[in-house]
Image 1: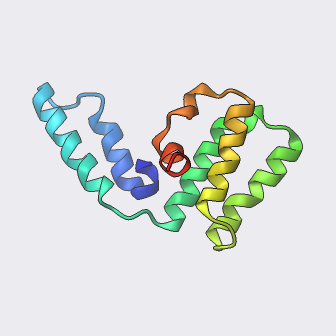
Image 2: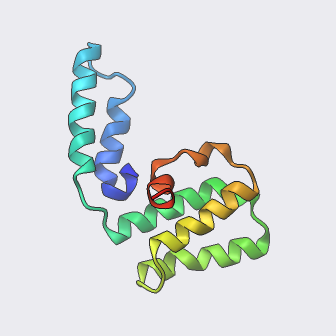
Image 3: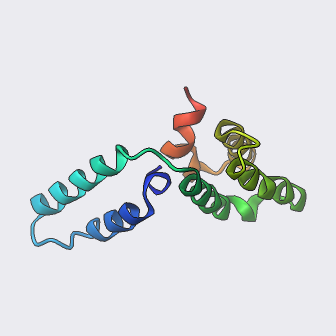
Length: 116
């Protein structure tokens, strides 16, 4: 979800997370402040496209050739406004359930759209 909001802040949060500050409190404060700032950013279509591409990278090894072909068209159709994000997330949900990819079952980017 963070990646769909701001790639720059996503990377910054990744640098804060390994506790680069000398104290836990400073690290927690820095991370929380940037996290909240990032969550207020409205997702842009290109950032969502990049997030979808990232998620595809996590599941591509599970998919058949036909499933890959079908899915690879979906993000570009989303980027063009032809299909909705909900439709793509439903496709992800199908693959995640079909192949029991537990790592992705709880990801907020997917569950925020799928479970509403």
